[in-house]
Image (cartoon, rainbow, N blue to C red; front, side):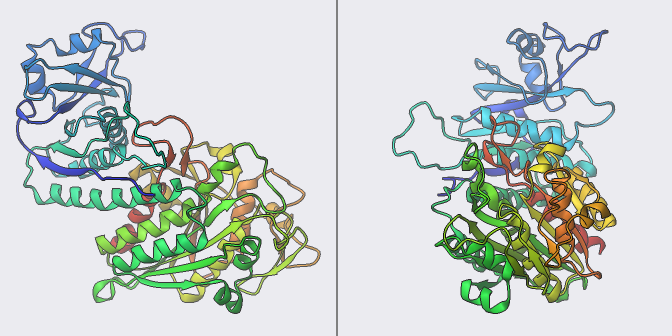
Length: 524
């Protein structure tokens, strides 16, 4: 299943009060009193720039009216007001931006979340204009990109599987206009084009993650990625179970052997025009289409969310489609190992010793530590093929959620590259926090019978996120800068929709990966 429609996006420089749309969105800031508490009483709201002509049409009573309706200006709050003919649009929606920033536009992530909240709240209004605060100079690209991305992602809805129409379910916004000083500006138009490409990749990632696991098993997932990649002009190589066994991909084969749906490894290749800048980037994503835990079976509670355990591979595959469209000047290869971790008479077992693609032998202590097994093979293959930078992302450990929560990813690997990931993540609104790879964690993973064990048995769940990073380090050659990005929390949102996140797959970290590729293309 896929989302039934996308959102069309364009720029306008018409007076917002005169736009022929179904709703116009403006921003409002909260004002804090002497005690620092935000008040919702009349007259305490502050209109953001972009709302001037709307306010004038209301004879200066707009903030008072919004406050009487309960508006506080809190981030993401949306208050709707019928215009009764004061402006062309029949509806004004005021979205909260929090306190007014000093001497600057709101942060890009604030705008991104505000746009997403507003577009989602306006479902049922086919055509919506956003008149949010944007700098009127050449430095407005980050803010414009954020508004565009938020609008496109806030309007996402997964098609689902319901057989009966729902009369109370309003259709998502289908057309968004963004008010800017100059709609013909080439830089602004480029930002819109980029936002459409990247948001499209995020939406596709969400579709794949949200698809029911009986409809997206390794062979069908591999086919879906391969078909999309070929259509985008990427090089495609797909290894089936026979090729994986013959090629020595012991980790992928072991994890996948418990399922009747056999494993796959998909490699995608982007070759830049004129050879690019000479650098090479490898992207690796975990593709466990469903994770029962295998013989070390998971508790039943919440297991249905394990359909999202392929979120890393989904993000990498979709990011490559964006790379193909944006054409950065750097060579990029992607490796998507796919398997279904099931308990059966053919499953791999605790106590098994598996020979990985790079020849290292791993003692299996917990079959629920399956992600690192398939990733180890894929990362070893990426290093063998040759790369300068390796970015791997995976829903690897519950320890990431315990340590950093549901919004911040953990990043481990080469310190300098981890800092680069953190900086890019902050810039695009997909934050990541560098974590250590302690020697004592590795010492506890020594095996009596093999080169390394999957987990540190002595530490059990302690430092669980770090154990995953320490294990994966074994499959990266010394000459490759690498970063492991654990997205167990941020890749799937089980709560109510917020900002530009809807319930289910979030598409994290597609935007980070695309920006990292562009950063390497620009800066080496």
